[in-house]
Structures are given as structure tokens and as C-alpha cells.
Length: 287
Image (cartoon, rainbow, N blue to C red; front, side):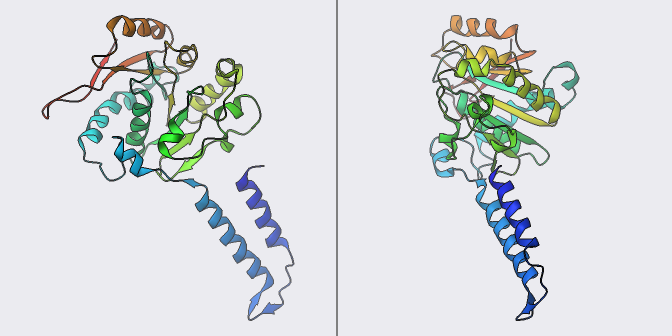
């Protein structure tokens, strides 16, 4: 039973306990118990909200809660628009599992987690959009560390059956439209778990049950493990992050070749571009 379910059960017991209407200072025992139960549930609800380390995010160049008009925020507004249109807009019917988006790179260090988190924050900032960010880089997870939230339990515990209910690994955050699933504990068979039938069923459930929620997977690098290629086959859209002037064209083309047979839409994002004030920091195109 989850923490919230435990609290609800305790609250119900308190409400049922001694419905005696004998008053104490003009307040019945029943009313006292009800008030205590409500206070306990309120405190629990507040404690269950994960807060972000905004100071760390700001220091490391991420979008923060108070810079909605920054250059970075404007750039991610442009980056997210075709993804959102594909996911829940006019092109939705043409793409299978259109609301599932995988963010990956060819090799480590190109900025895929930076992109995943900023993309999630940018989409969640819209009044009518909900986002679920999943740390699927289970070998080297970093989403929870960057955001400053708890790291377990998470995806691995759910996939191996240690946790039955998906809701038990979804973290509610202080950003109203954003939920997070951590990677969870380290596991020597993480690749097998990501390629399991339970993972495929999870992806299908996220797409079918929550068609209006955009799900972003922060994936391992494509050429470092086989996990990203497996995950790419479960989503409708892939964003391939490419580090400018450091990742060779051959490496990028090798990654694209792995992706084109998997996802309906493969977009590339050129990251770490050195630019002047009158140019954009990103390049965004489609293979």
C-alpha cells in the first residue's frame, strides 16, 4: 500500500473511531478526529510534493521558474512546438504513440539530459499541458540528481515487479503540470528489463491511457548501449541531440540509421553551438 493510501486508511479509522457525540469544550470527539485527520492528510499532501534545486538548475544553465522571457526559454518554445503538434495536435493521427518522445544522443556528453529536462519544463509551463518525465537512462541516471529529487523507487522497481502500481513511482513536483518517474535502483539486467514485455505494456498504457499527456524519456546514448534502440521502438517521436563541432557526421549518420526503422518521427537538435547575440543557439531539423 502506498504512503497516501496508508494515510487515507488511518484517516478513515479516525473518522469511524468513537462517533460519540459527547462534547468536550463544545466540540465532539468525532469532530476532533475529523479535524486531526484532515490536518494529517494536508501535511502528507504537502510533503509528497518534490521541490527542485532551482539554484543548481540556474547555475548550470537550465530553464528556471523565474526566467520565462530568457533567450533559452524562447529557444525551447521553438524547439517544443513541432513535438507538441505531433503529439497532441493536427498530426497526432498520423503517428503511432505520438505523445511518447525519446530524447537521446549518439555518445555521452552531448546534452540529452539537459534537453530532456528543459523540454519538460517548457511544455509544463503551458497552462493546458501535462508532462511526465521518465529517467530511462537506468545505467547512469541523472534526472533526479539534477532536479534535486529522490531517486528511488522508480522505473527499475516497477519493471522487475517489486512495485505493482505505476502511481507508486510517479513523483508529483512543485511544477503543476510536471510529474517525474526516477530511474530507480541499479540493476545488472537493466537492458533486459527495458526490452521486457512489461516495458512494452507500460509504453502502450502511457500512450493509450493518457493520450493528452506528453511523456518524455531521457534515454541512454544510442551508440553506448543497446537500451536506447530498444526504447526507440516503443515511442512515436525521437529527438537526437548532437553536440556541435564535436560529434562527427559519421557518428550522427550511424545513429540516424538505427532510429529510422524504429520511430515514425526523428528530429535532430544541434546543441552547444557558439553564437553571437543575433543567432540561435540551437539547430533543429528533420532527417
